[in-house]
Image (cartoon, rainbow, N blue to C red):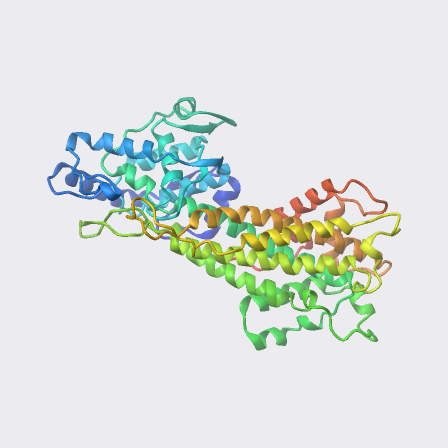
Length: 510
């Protein structure tokens, strides 16, 4: 697979999403090397001198006042890595762990971290050969860097801990050897440069962002189908309504839904003489709600794109040669972005769940049969599928509680305010999975509802969505074992297949 070439400070969200989805290798642009090596030379000179420089020839955190002899700096860095390997819980997904490694490349490539090019080359080689450190996903508070998870990454570079290679998890030294690689020995500050930083939190937040945006476009697609299923009005999608308010996400959401519904026979059949004056909010206000979520996701995306390109370790080698301690490792921007993404995920699912509830309720669905079954009573149809969406909607509401506000002091009060960005970002994957189930069930209900409107036909784009769903999930007639249907529909929602089947380009994240 062709490596993705990363230009520090200029790498885009599109590149990062490709890296995450395809697990392609990544390399720094060659022009980054001069800056990396210049900073490394400055660190080497400081390590050989007598002036205390934090993390170069001193201890760490509360131990920064302790001077370390020049001959012990390599041991200092190795001990730092091994002592910080305190992660617990399930390992990171491989794709997200690889994205984290690519983000560390970008940070080191800014030429402010002081690592030798050999460290960069080792990360590149591991990505190229498919050696992925096993990184426990719990243990970071998102300040002073994502210390524990990044330490597990760095440990694998030293031949310690575990790594995955060729589909097998094995001791890291063995995985490196099998890939034709040798462990590295860290020089001054290099261990600190590897574990100080926000790359763990940022990788998880980016994965959540990419999943959330795909879910938002899927939500617009299936909500258009739901609108036709309950014979809803397209009048609330008229362009002037949305331009009068001015929010970009709302305007784009309405335009996309108009295009999806254009040409529907179902819509034309009740344009005149419909006794209903207005549809419920879950139909009428979809552009306002999911459009607002799209705007929030784009704000978070901008923050995360900046963070992905940032130098976030400590101390940093500045352009004048000074080695200065700062606080770029504090993941507060990532924590805020993760909380914003969580809110968008929760609200997108909340309004989608109400559409599911609308369609299964015969008092609200405009003459659809109860629970969308042709033989209600003997059959329960989609009754409990709706209950499942309610459970997942509620779970996502709880998960959307802000994390960034939950600081606690750590490390003997040296790190007395932390971002909690790590678990704020990590929960997003679970929320995306929950939302995809809700949207999958909505697609099942909407397709079933549209089919009940025959011989009237939905629009050509939405007919494509129904056809794609029906290639894997047949129409529901008599009751059957439902769990596989829900799993398949959720997979189709999460993969973007339903949006693709419509044949109309959805709004883009960037």
